[in-house]
Amino acid sequence: MKALVLASHNAGKLKELQAMLGDRFHVRSVAEFSQEAPEETGLSFIENAILKARHAARVSGLPALADDSGLAVDYLGGAPGIHSARYAGNGDDAANNSKLLQALQDVPDAQRGAQFVCALALVQHADDPLPVVCEGLWRGRILHAPQGANGFGYDPLFWVDAHQCSSAELEPALKNRISHRALAMAQLSARLETLE
Image 1 (cartoon, helix red, strand yellow):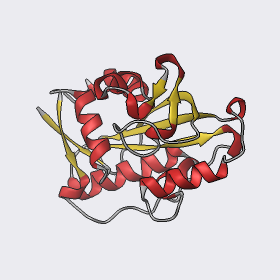
Image 2 (cartoon, rainbow, N blue to C red; image 1 turned 180 degrees about the vertical axis):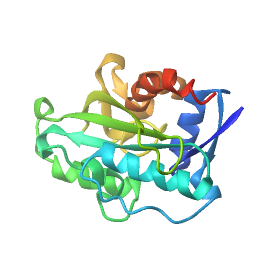
Image 3 (cartoon, rainbow, N blue to C red; image 1 turned 135 degrees about the horizontal axis):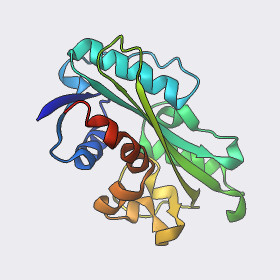
Image 4 (cartoon, rainbow, N blue to C red; image 1 turned 90 degrees about the horizontal axis):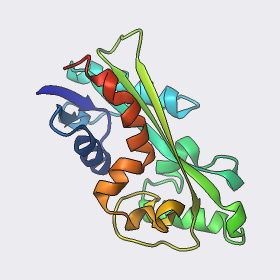
């Protein structure tokens, strides 16, 4: 089984991606190699994913997969966007959710459309001139209060119309088949065979 380093310190992402990859790869966290995080200077999810993948490959010496993802709310012009993890300033899920609810306080359901965005970047090595990039978009809307205990981040506020529940109320196995990350991973899956 080939090792692949995930350019994230987020245990939730590591668990989800390992579940999606199954036993094809042994996913290791970049935290095993370095506590330093690259500066995310990109203006898009894709740019930041590539920056993170190159950093992880550089510190680990392994092929690296980076996920840059977040929530884009229509009413807020795509915010919190690339700043989703630090929307409230401290990286705390509860604080981020609270700030989002405040920003949408009097906004009716019809204007609360949103999408989770996932950009994945895979590099064979730090200076790979041809990173593989895939993107997944998962449409939904923002609830008025959190629902559910599964998942992480904005999952308790993200209503999944097709399943009539929040993302945080989905069984993890189902979420791993239909989420933004799952859609991006489905695109990436065939390309990963070149590493095996």
